[in-house]
Image 1 (cartoon, rainbow over the protein chains, first blue to last red):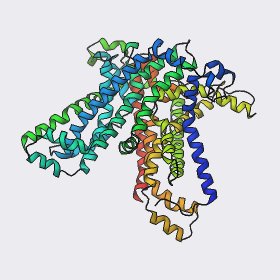
Image 2 (image 1 turned 60 degrees about the vertical axis):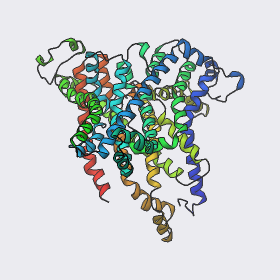
Image 3 (image 1 turned 90 degrees about the horizontal axis):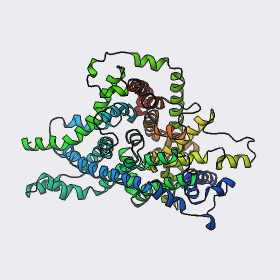
Length: 282
Length: 294
């Protein structure tokens, strides 16, 4: 359907050149990151252009060092905790809220469904200062659960909007049959709506995980003690240490990048759909 | 509907509503209050904030600082440059990936990586790559394209150019996905008609493809402009605001963390918000509405 039957050789050449350049541009920093994490710095310093993986040169020492001696393993677990809980709570709360807006008639419904997305247009930096004072005042600073609350506030509007759009495309017939057969509202959501919406749920979960896993600003402003650092914050801390080599820092960066890319590769189709449906802020 | 259904509805919406209101809407309102009061971080312990008189001192401080106008200019260059480059790269990528070919899935996946990786990780990689002794400079020197290495992230105007490049690199996948989705929705009848009329590929692009993409391009530019205008992470991680890249968000941070001046930080955030609002108004009137009408 989309084949330009008459693509000229010149055009084809141009297109393929663009493709190669773009793939190189997008992929090179990651390739470099991996090589720099495996090659001892002396080799790269002597010849920065020799980026081939030469078997004898490569070593995993930097990974071991950064994971154990620089506590990256600990930061990794913190990130996993924050992202996991954020995903779970976002899915649970957003499913119920989106279902309510899509199916139950109540006063203020139209206003609410229209105003959800406006909320998420407020930039993080505008709320950063007042949140900083709020969190300082109520002792939520330097607290991973405070961070989770912040991420929820960011992910919920989009998650609700995405799920709401999806629920609207589902026919209510099956649900009504369930209600008539004596299921409660929750029973219907759990047995009918959720199974039918799995693709949308996966998209929302990935989107949420990506936000929570990658977030930098709030983790940087609000978390003070290494005990509570997430990966992003922890890598900043490691970078501030003057004894840290490029190799070590790149090993840490690879460790932070790999989970999100793996997850993305596993569920790529859903993620792409999810991203275009919600329009991930960032 | 039954009363109990109504109550259930409010209950289910209540929790997300409370979280979003208290952590987004309330801070926005409170930011306005802070902007008009001289509050410093140490005052946070003090409970009687309402005794503080309202004042414009924060704004006097902001506007009379020697680097306010350069910071505003830097913000506009960074934002316009970044949003434009991301859109251009996204469009090229979408056009190149649109026809089916072998390995398309791999290409599409690779192109998305810059966008999904943690910003901290990619920012550090870029800093090493652009280092005067890094791979880019070595390659340029080796090819005799220059005699002296340039400190790309520490010299004007290279720092700003590198930053714009980073922004385009990091966010073009987002535009790419949306443009690709829109491209695939263009009815092929239009291309058949154009082919019958004997339109060259260039003409087809300008008279069939581009008009169809106008609205999505205008929307993507708008979104990216808004998000880049408010971007702090990327600038902070890549240049720390050095060499002409101190944008307004960096100044918010400097007031808050550098000077513990909460009032001035809030004021700066408000100025940022106001400038952006002004831009959006103009953009909607001059770009979005004409694009929608056609």
